[in-house]
Image 1: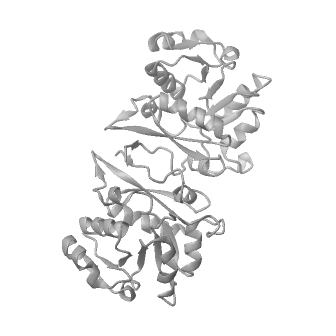
Image 2: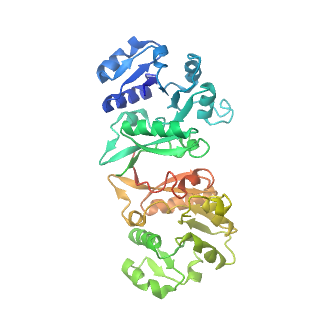
Image 3: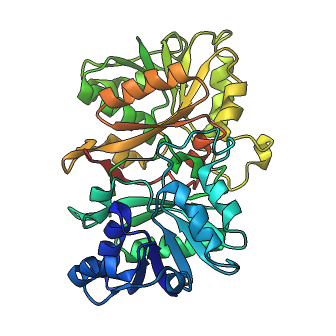
Length: 195
Length: 196
């Protein structure tokens, strides 16, 4: 399984830091090109590889850590998303419910990435907390995971666990997924699962 | 606001223990009568009063901590539930909801309590953990709360916080509340909420 992070802002950099800490190789790309990410990659070590956007989109699992409206540009950069897992780590700050036509934001993302299995996770903590070691005083910080595809959800729960978090699978978007949407009950909760 | 716990099994006792530790007065009742509870009440101290079932059901907030099958008998023990808040601390321990017509178990319980505002909480931790101190490792143990009445949800979240837990509101029973179903994703999770 190959991974890439699209976006090198606060969330993208926080995620890159977790991959580096866990020793899992990951590509990272943004719209400005790999040179702009070189300093971050140098700091994080050999597991974090700056890539062009096109190369990064070849990964099996593509993690979207861009501002919400930028997801459509990423979606258009690849002709077929079939067989890929797209992780929606975005939030809809400043995006009105009208713009989403009343849909859950992750459903809007799924429509843009037709053919991919979309999993929502890694979106729910402030970037600073997301970047911290998820091992806390004998427990692990909780990361909720939701998808309409049970298999992709389970695979991403495993990735989240490999990154050191305690995954909790919420099921489909209409079941638990809405709780990690904008303003949801499980957003911005610093929860530590005890062993 | 007056409170009553119905049921003196593991969950009922664990809750009574938390009320006692928090110094909040609560009536405690079961189907066998107050004599069967007097020793427990004495042990827990002045906040906990062993009561007849009928008297306990006069409380503003009635906590059902009985086996799921027993809820119907308690519902029938009072003719009018109007204006009361009922806390469903029970679990329907079957993998399928088909016997409940596909309803979440708390929706099923609510149907037998016309006029009451039902809130689901206290159902999701093993009794020993429910009874133990919720302040731990610089945070507080999470207690999820779900229900169809915002005002009752907020009132019960207030109680949950007073008992020392960190309440997290999940919204309606058929939506976020469904995560608290038997073997659901948010049951049996020992979570400590830290400041962010």
